[in-house]
Length: 124
Image 1 (tube, rainbow, N blue to C red):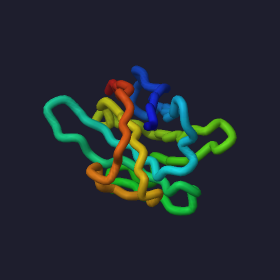
Image 2 (cartoon, helix red, strand yellow):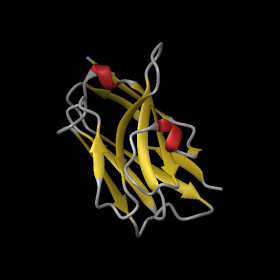
Image 3 (spheres, one colour):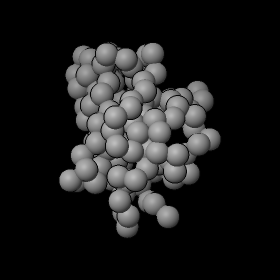
Image 4 (cartoon, rainbow, N blue to C red):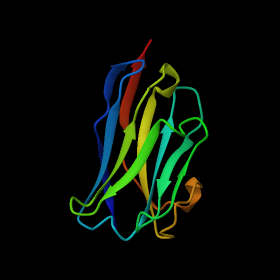
């Protein structure tokens, strides 16, 4: 079993940047596809970005393309989400998840392990 821990959230102003990290405890994350999802108050959880287990394939939601970058740091056994040019609409709890499929799947049902989430708040 993989336990995932997100970090790096916080309160920023519109236009600022943040980098979220997803780190597993107990096992390597390097053998899993990893995705980031987010859930804003009163809204359903939505896909943000995903990366295949070797990092060769990435997928992004249209709303974050060109602003967010997902990447792997195999040495640190982590996956990062670099978020630039943040909008107030990006305010949400951000979750990382790991999938046995190893692909950059955008479907939440295909992820088996989830972290507890980290809050990102973007003020206008």
